[in-house]
Image 1 (cartoon, one colour):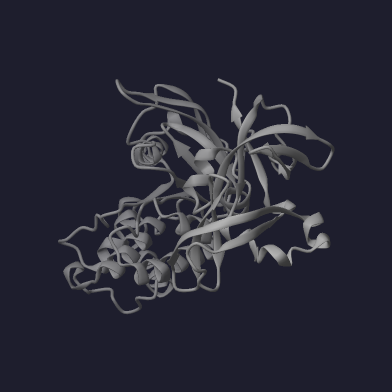
Image 2 (cartoon, one colour):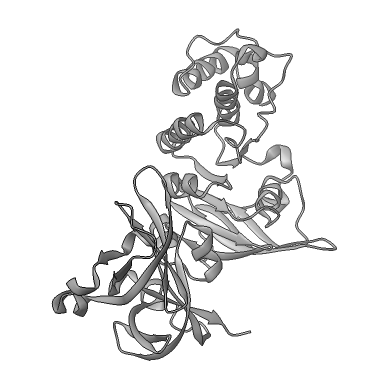
Length: 369
């Protein structure tokens, strides 16, 4: 895990223990960074936000925000803004009073509070909505007001718990861009909980993947998608091919693995992630993404192409699924299922050679239990 940084958020050895679940995490976030927490339902994402905000007290561990010990600060004094999934606006207050609520609690002068409210209304794209009742707003407008309310007291940290999950797909896309733009404009440190992989990949500086109360992997969106650390990570972020493999040998740049008695040249995980000392097994899985594959007729395979790619000849097309821009195609290669992406529809039962560039192949080693 990353070392504690004075400027930003740091959680070290944080544990929250229940009868049937234990949260056990450590991570650090740089000041001004936008980090997404992802993982399946029940993995501990919302519990993590609750511990950071002070809604829950951890049983063990330390936590600091910009050099201050958060565990010694009561919830109402933590400089943290929270945007909830269900908006949680005050129904008896108009938009101006909702946004200015935190400023009123802090006893900010009325004229300054009004000026700040008007500025935030401009930023969220709702100028002139000051006196509008909350019940007149659409779901997207309510969520923007909830964001403005969280930002009004100038928080050092912004927490967002699946803020767009109740909205339709088109509105989610436009609002996530708006949230990302506002976060960058104000340079506020943010943790964004989402179950939407595409959302996390599109707006995050880094992603923290959780599984069963623990952190599975931390990395940039590019690393999480192209260089997953574990089988769980690989399967969480989109479609992939994963077939059993055994490490054969390696040099300073690449290694070879054996899949079904065939040598495959791959990039080692630790060459990309810097985890050379992590204990791993010689057993694992060959991994690549569907869009990395090149499709050739068996007779068209060229020698110069073969030297830079791993080839899987005589793969039989089993079926395809259209997604609007092309086809995800399942192929049977000597009893193993390979998933590829094709711009054109391939006939079921046809035989092809699948070529995957060496740099797109990864060996994901099994952990030593």
